[in-house]
Structures are given as C-alpha cells and as structure tokens.
Length: 387
Image 1 (cartoon, rainbow, N blue to C red):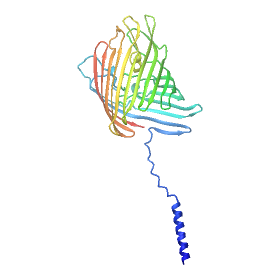
Image 2: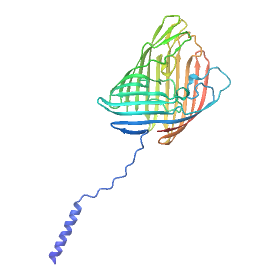
Image 3: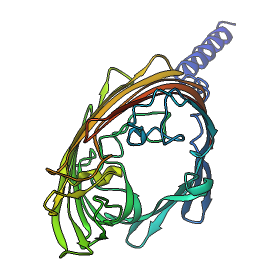
C-alpha cells in the first residue's frame, strides 16, 4: 500500500514538473490596423507599378469688384480705370479638375519613372498639358516645374493662381540632380525652354529667343523642413523693325523655406529678386527706355504664409505676397504694372480622406507705372474629390 502511494505521488510530482517546465502558450496577436488606402487607382503590371490619379474640383466664385481673370485670381488683370461701378460677377466652373498617370519600375540602369498630367484650363475648357516627364537616376527630361522654383513651398489656396511674387512656371527642360545627403539635401542644374518672355514696348519688332535659360537649385533638408536657393540666367533679345537688334542679360535668385511648426502647422517664405525674373510669373522681362535701348526689368517680391490645423479635419492657411517691378527710366508705355498685392485666407473641412470643402477670401491690388490704382475682393467656395 505504501509502495503504491509513493508511486502515485512520484507520478504526480513528475507531471507537475513537466507542466511547469513547458513555455506558456502565446497570447493571440492583436488585430492588424489597416492604413488608409493610397490615393489613386493602382495596378501591378509585370515589374511596373501604375497609378491613375487626379481629382474633380468645382469652384463657386463671387467677385465684389471687377477683375479680368474670373476663373483664377490674378491681380495683374485688375483694372485701374477708377470707375465707380464695382463690376460684380459670379462664376461656377470645374476647370481645375485634373488627371495624371504615374508609371514606375526597374531598368538595367536604375529606377524609371514616367509622369503625365493635365487639367482643363486650356482655351474653351480644353484639356491641356501640365506635366510630361521621365526620370532615370539623376536625369530628368520633359516638361515640369522649373528648376528655378520651389514646388514644395507653395501654400494651399482654393484659388488656382496661388500667391504671386515667386516663380511659378512649368516648362520643357533637361535636368540633372545630385544627392548631397541621404536626408534629402541635393543640388540640380537644368537647361530650360526660354519661351514666354514678354517685352513692355509698343515699338514694332520681333522678340527672339537667342539662348535657353540655365537654372539651378541647392536644397538643404533638415529636421524642421527645408531651405532652398534657386538661380537662373538667360538673355532677352529684341529686333525692332527700324533699328538694330539688342540683347540683354537676365538673371535672378529665389530663396525659399518651409518649416514645420508645432505638430502639424507649416510656415512658408519665398523671396525673389532679379532683372528679368518677371517672366517666371508671366510678367514682363524687359522694356525699351526713352532712348530706345533694351533694358531688363528689375523685380523684387516676397511671399509669406502660415498653415494651421485646428483639428484632424479642419485646417486654414493665410497668405500674403507683394511684388514690384522697377521699370527703366522713361518707358513710354501706359498700363504697365509696377506693384502688385495678393492676400488669401481660407477654412477647409476634410470631410473624408479623399474629399474636402472650403471657403476662401481673396484680396488683390494693382498699381501701374503712371500711379493709377485698382483693387479687388473675392469670395470663393470649392469642393474637391480625389481619386
């Protein structure tokens, strides 16, 4: 009997020891939280990733004063005729709607990217080309934002024009980019299309594009954002009907910075200066003085903006920009813009991860060389749906 009890006790102790020696059963894994889907319709085609992106945007615009650009807010089109009639106007359009195709994949020489985008701001709501470029390694070729400008330092506005007084242009180019640090600092140089140069002159003749523009940028990326210095150089040439052709040198520089403030806010600044830099915003490049000599127009401008996130769904951006063109002495042309102002403040509600609605107040002013002055006020409402 005692031997049986001892055997049973020994078996119980052995079983308990084996049980204690086993590792505890693993706890069930927590459920995986899915991240929001990336914007755009995406496919995998062989080794290439293909994405169709874009959005549909509708704008309801009410002007309290007369302005020539009813679909965007361009202070250069504000009349300075000092008429008493305010010239109210209401406009509803969807021309900002855009579509793009982004293709990426490997090649024997590195990763290839091809990007094409257009919107409906062409004549008669026609679909027009915005971007069409390819990149392979450090080489870019095609049409896209100028190397002179900083496309990552543009504040959010409902208005299609966006604040004036900093470079904003897409043009054909061949660009090379070299990395400085893995954190995003780099340099880039480019040869770009010189088209869109305009001369402030009533003298009969022909504007000639004698040389391309040579552009460059250096960007320093840091923990709070980035700073960038952009430069350009080129020429303007005018061949009058009754005089020898003249050529002048153009150049300019643009300093820009975007800083992350607090957790989600952003501060923007751009300062631009240069003889002939006005062409990078659709303005005049050069003019004939009272002696008939061709001279570049000095341009100085700045832009400052702040983006504030009230909550996860509500945000606002306030922007102000000012630009001045110093015309050559004795320019015999009336109606040439000398000073421009642009101010905007908005409130945007992100009612889904792919759509938002917002309202924006805009103010602009224009002063011409002869001292005439005009101003305009606008209220704009917009709704956007992203693919």
